[in-house]
Amino acid sequence: MRFWLALAAALVLLTGSRRVLAEGFDAAVAGLARASPDDVARAVEAIGASGDPRALPILQALSDGELRVDDDGHAYIYNKDGSLRDVSNGTGTAGPGHPPSIDNGVRRVLGPLIARLGLQSSDPDTRLAAVADLARRASEEDQPALRDALAKERVRSVRRALISALAEADLASEDAQLRLAAVRAIEDAGSLNLAPKVQALTGPGEPDAGVRDAAKHAVRSLHRKQTLVDGAADVLYGMSTGSILLLAALGLAITFGLMRVINMAHGEMVMLGAYATYSTQTFFHDHFPQSEPLYLVAAVPVALVSCMVVGALLERTVIRHLYGRPLETLLATYGLSLLLIQIVRSTFGAQNVEVQNPPWLSGGFEVFEDVVIPYNRMAVVLFTVVVVGFVAYVLRGTSLGLRVRAVTQNRPMAACMGISTARVDTWTFALGCGVGGLGGVALSQLGNVGPELGQGVIVDSFLVVVLGGVGKTAGSVVAAFGLGILNKVLEPIAGAVLAKILVLMAIVLVIQKRPQGLFAPKGRSVETA
Image 1 (cartoon, rainbow, N blue to C red):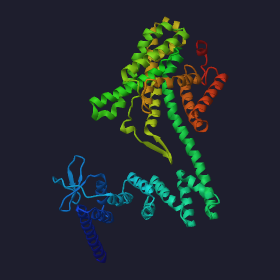
Image 2 (image 1 turned 30 degrees about the vertical axis):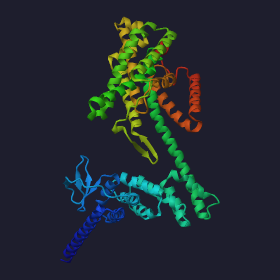
Image 3 (image 1 turned 90 degrees about the vertical axis):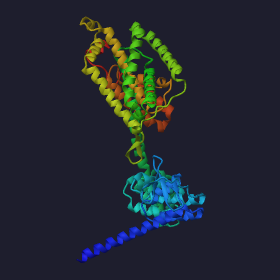
Image 4 (image 1 turned 90 degrees about the horizontal axis):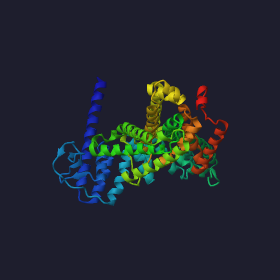
C-alpha cells in the first residue's frame, strides 16, 4: 500500500511540475509580443530557462524570421506549406500576426541560447552544429553547458568536438591541472587539429614539468596518428583515382590491346560520355524534375550507347582503311580528336559545364576517425568493379567475345571459319569507345566537364595499358590502381609535378625489365602479339 501511495504522489508531483513548466513557458512566449526589444530579450532568456522541449524550435524560428506573434500573446511558426502553427497547442490559425521586435541585443542573447539548447537535442548533427557554434564564440559562459554535455555524450564525433572546444580554453588556463587534463583529453580523443597548441606546451614557456612531459607524449601520439591517417587517406583516395584511370584505360585496352589500333581520340570518348551525362541531367531537369535525382542511372546506358555509335561510325569511315599502318592511324585519330573537341565546343560552348551529384551521392562516409571518403568516390570505385565485370563477361562469356578473341589471335583462320572479321572489328572498336564513355560518366561526378576533358586522361590511359600488358585486362586493373595509389602517396612528399615525373620514371624502369608489361602474354599468344 505504501508503494502505491508513493507512486501516486510522485505522479501528482510530476504532473504538477509539468503544468508549472508549461505555464512558465506560455508566459515567457507571451513576452515575445512586447513592443520593447529589451522585454523580448528577457522573454527569450525565460524560454531558454523553461526546460520545455518546445523552446528550441520557437527560438530557432525567431532567429530565422519564421515566427509571428499576436496581441493576445500567442506565437505561431510557419509550416513548410506557408500556414501558421500555434506554438502552444500545435493547431493552425488564419491570423497573420506580426514579427517580434528584435534588435542586436536580442540576437546576442538568442545565438548562444540556441546553441546551448542544441546541445540537448536528440539529433547528433544538431548537437555537433551547436558545439561548433559555441566553439567559435569561445565564451566562458558556455563552458558549464559544454562540460555537462560532454559528461552525457556517447557519440564519438560529438565527443571529439566537445573535447576540442573545451581543451582550447583549458590549454590557456593558469591552472596546471586543467592544462594537464586538457592535454590528456586531446591525446585520448586524437584531436589532430589541436596538435600545434599542444606542441606549444613542450617548450620552456610551460612552467609545469608534468604538463611539458604530457604534452611531449601527446605530440608523439598525435604525429603517429597523423601518419596513419595520411597513409590511409592516400590509399583510399588513390583507389578512387585509380578507378578513373581504369575506366578511361579499359576501353583503350580493348582498342589498342586487342585491335592494335593507336586511338588518340579515345580521350574524347571519355569526354563525350561526360557530356552525355550532362545532357541527361539537363533533360531530366527540364522534363522530369521530380525524378531528377535518378538522372545518373539513365546516363549510364545513354553514354554507353552514344559512344558505341560514335565509335562504330569512326571505325566504319576512317579506322577500317588504316589497319596495319600505325603512324597513319595515330595521325588520323589525333585529327578526329580535334574534330570532336570542336564539335563539342560549337554545341555546348567553350566553358566548362557542371554536372551535379545527385542527393544520394552527396556527403561522405567516415571510414575511421578523421578519414572521410565522399560518397561519389565510393560510387566510382563500385561502378568500376561493375564495368570491369561487364567487360570480362563480354570478352569471356559471350559469342562476341569468342569471335573477338579468335580474330585477335589469328585473323585469317577466323575468316576461314566463317567469322565476319570486319563486323567483329566494328563491334570491338565500338565496345572500347562505349567503355570509355562509361569512364566519362564516372569522371563527371568528380569535377566539371569541359571540351578538353579527354586530353588529361589519354596519356595516363596509354601508360596503364602498356604497364599492365597489352591486351591484358587484369594487368590494366593492377596498373591503374597501382599508379593511382602511388601518385597519391608521392604528391604530398614531392609535389604534384615531381610526383608525375617519379611515376613516369618508375614505369620506364618496369618496362625496361618487362617490355611486355606486368602481365605478359604466355604461350601461343606471344607469337601472334
